[in-house]
Amino acid sequence: MKEKSVSEAIKFRRSVRIYNPKKSINSNLVKKCIEQALLSPSSSNLQLWEFYHIKSENFLKNVVKVCFNQPAAKTAQELVIPVVRLDLWPERINSNVNFIKISNKGKDKEKIKGAIEYYQKAIPKLYRGSKGFKSFFNHIKTYYRGLKKVTYREVRRNDIRIIGHKSTALAAQSFMISMAALGYDTCPMEGFDSVRLKSLLKLPKSAEISMVIGCGIREEDGLYGERFRLPLKEVYFSK
Image 1 (cartoon, rainbow, N blue to C red):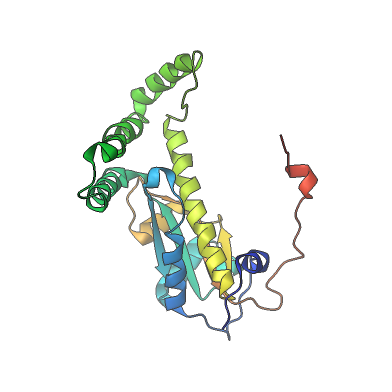
Image 2 (image 1 turned 45 degrees about the vertical axis):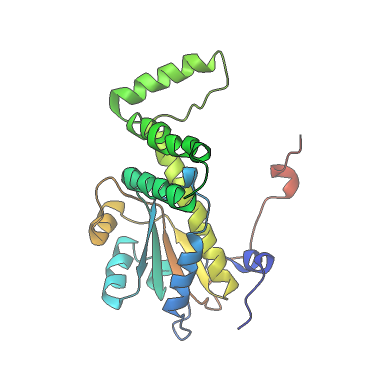
């Protein structure tokens, strides 16, 4: 099977609502697409994401129930669930620092000092300061600092949440494009009971589910209509 080009895959990708039960997909290839998704950019390279690949029939049925039995989940052969894990930032900082030290072994220590200090000082300050009273205090301090100079302003808990979801969504899109390149279909879903789904996946309270992605090969009536997109002139602005 010849893989599609990037442009071909982007055009092929649609949110498919009904999958063909007679056409199977290869779980190993789905896993490979998840692996490719891990190459996506993430804020500060923290990679605060996890991907749950749902393949077993029994578990699939349980997930479908908390997705309101919608066709995009019910007819899917497999599901992939990207999860935001903001709580893992200390571990991911350590992973980055260790990589910087190992990959720069024998090089000028001064060159890597700034990168290590960024991970060991700036990032912890941002993530620790995004909760409770610290969040409010940092927001006020940032506001007044911003009156005098260019300032980074996304310092509150919701700001950090948005950053985590943006990075995870970028990886989810990479996954769906990788699937499309293989001729596999997907559908990102936001319709699910997040509390029950987190319980099924045994996730900690701090984890947040970005979306549930149905995977399979489209049925003839799997698309609910023609693709509609706003014309470029309505969304494109050149300065």
